[in-house]
Image (cartoon, rainbow, N blue to C red; front, side):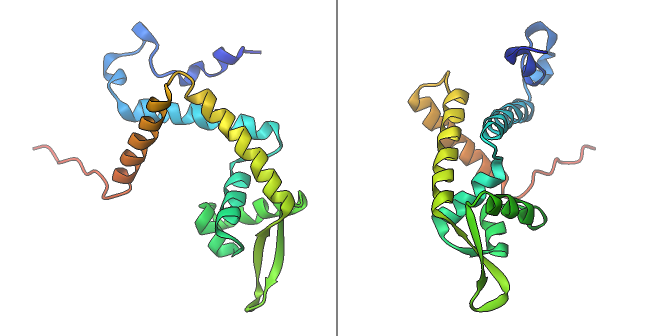
Length: 169
């Protein structure tokens, strides 16, 4: 079995002399490999407590915005509607959410976080705070704040019109 450092080595961006300079100049590759490493760290930590990212985002959306229909919750949590039913089943089995008929439309359910779900969300918050601390350990507090601000700015920019390279003649 590989050690912890060897396990993530395939996602290392720069392997010194083994990495071509053109590759080292590709921001998309650096961000992509870093995103894969952070996703792995988060997934591993959540899995260790019997959860996954969709549990966290659904509970967070319910805690912050209140009860919601499945459709509204899918949009708020950004979970595909086709995946949401399984996530809600898992959360209901854990006692972390409750489904009740919508008084305005009995064909729909309203999803509500339970007291146990609030406690579970607090546990997941702590797990992910630990992951964030691990990921940003080499940075100062100011650098962490700057990283978040810069990544948010780039993400907002990229959510706009897509880049279209000019056709060469």
